[in-house]
Image (cartoon, rainbow, N blue to C red; front, top):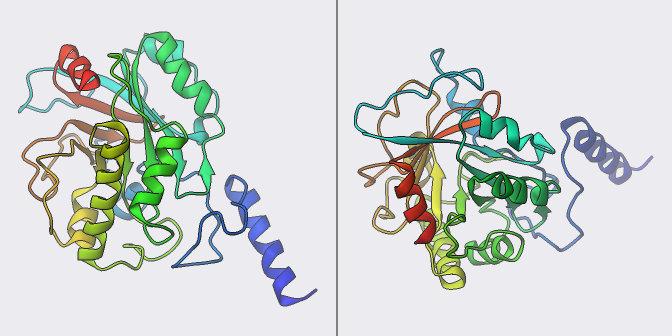
Length: 278
């Protein structure tokens, strides 16, 4: 067997073992950083948990209480899901008190969540306010290209009181260099390109999901998105801790990754509805 064929077989085996989705068609998602890395269903926060670890006091079960942030007066419980969860039992999540959900729609420009319809529509039908998110791969294509792919494949927004603005999941690279081979200013420019394109397409700025540590490392605390983009911060602990550069408050806090990613909205339910309405 040739070296090329052996490499192809090895990649296919890795895809099967790790549960990645099918590889994108040739030319669908040009890769700058690692041309051998398959595009898969990378779950929100999976790389933050891998790189930053999990605090021992994080919530572990569906019925565990949401950590109390002394700085907020009210909160709303929610979850986020990806293809890893398959068909979600939305009635069980509703019964557990979850009132909003974010669903992964896309990754790069070569992956679409095969369970998106069941998850996105199912959360809506049970009564939740829901939104969709995009896992960023900044080394593979421009921010504009990925924003357009996201909007075209489930990432849109409508003022119906039940749809949250799309979210940009920007975290550690699951396929290579931590910061995707981009310099700090280049990373800021990529995020701005995605954000501005999403706003041009939908009329809303996307929420930005990240961790304080990744943001400091990969943007060098350059730029300021705090006046336009709501913050969704990840920290698996009993307190939210320091926030990324310039953000004075968070909109959503992802405080645990078990058994499904657990989130809390910073405000009362009517403020969540107001955010959905824009």
